[in-house]
Length: 86
Image (cartoon, rainbow, N blue to C red; front, side, top):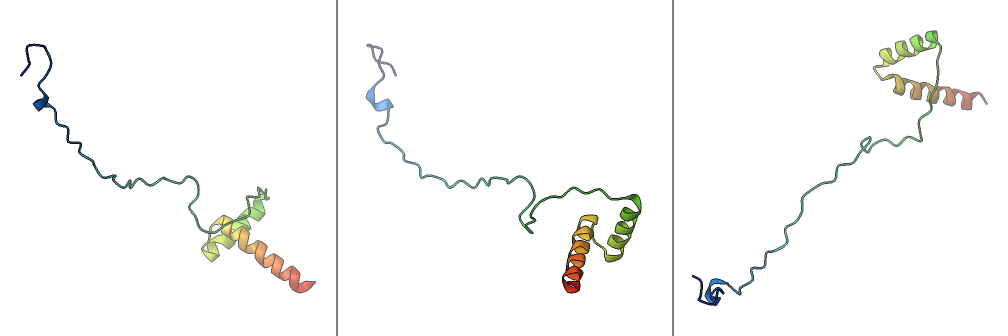
């Protein structure tokens, strides 16, 4: 309904303001990189001879661990033996 003056009647507009409650946001920020867990000091690149790699892979397969874990364990074993010898 339009009045002769071209304006809308006041009854068409409601003065009641509907206040909506704030919704909690459930968006989780994805973290990048490795998942939290064992904290290592850093990465040390190393080169091995072919025979050493074969021996390392054999040891890792025998103990059912990855190559990286095999290197970590063998270094620990070597350090423990060195402490016992000195």
